[in-house]
Image (cartoon, rainbow, N blue to C red; front, side):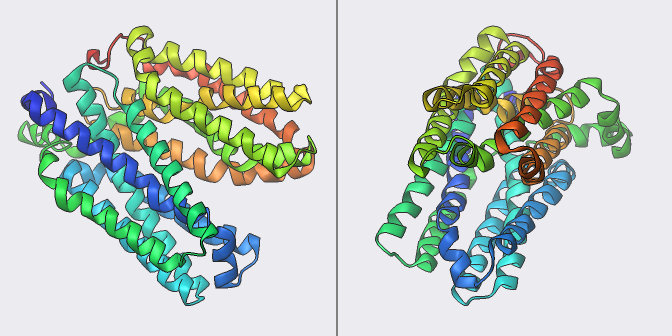
Length: 404
């Protein structure tokens, strides 16, 4: 019996809608700030490489908190994790924009770290809740939840672009969006169940089992190791698409910034649509098979970009690339959330995903410099081959509620 199974259908639906809202707002403020990075670089008076170092502080915060999130949730539950994470994230963004407005690169870096810490713990919390909702409803829900994140990110980018065009003050842009973000936990906290994530821990303690026994079992779980390796490959390919697709078309294809931007928009659109409809595919064909088919499509897309030499083939390749990586995070985390100790398992697999997504793409830049960016994409082809092989850990049971 899962925790979510004890809730009424109405309570589960309210919980589901609330988690969708959280996924949406998590992409909003961040992407609106990223769009205005040229202005940020000017305000804090740093070079591009120094700005990259500041942003890396945020990545360190996220990776650190994701690795600790499982323990936090096992003790306090997902409700506390999500609300605490949102509060820390909002504090981080307010601190960042305050120091940016005052030209302090050091203060900006410190609060980028703070925001990353909050994002990591909240991210694991909402994904654990998403996996529990899947178990209660018997349907794969995490892909649509991640689609909500994509939609929020697109909306935030649009707000940032509009603010840039109208010269709207960056400080007030982030303050307003941060205020909107904090309204969500204030108005929806009652819809988040208090016990999710801690029930199984209490049961094991009641039986006299030490927490260390459950913790060490994760490292011995072959399925979880497969999921961690699989998510490493697919999130490396996803993160690299953000950093290197447009650069490849401008540098190696000699295309304009506009045409490169269209390719990136095609990729984002393909990811969003795949996430929106991908849950139905996973329910019908199973998670492993869905991941393998999409990864194969992503491999074809990357090869079209590497060998195509034609803008239209590159756009097609970008579409297939977007489809290929879209369901990596949601389906691997969904599979990890099945069975006992879901918080620790999701945190473990998510840590691997964050590591690849945040750290891998910048390091690929060294290979791109030495080999050329499109040639560097062969590494991403290999990463998706790894995903294809290790996706078997996700299982092919039909429906989200069938478990493993």
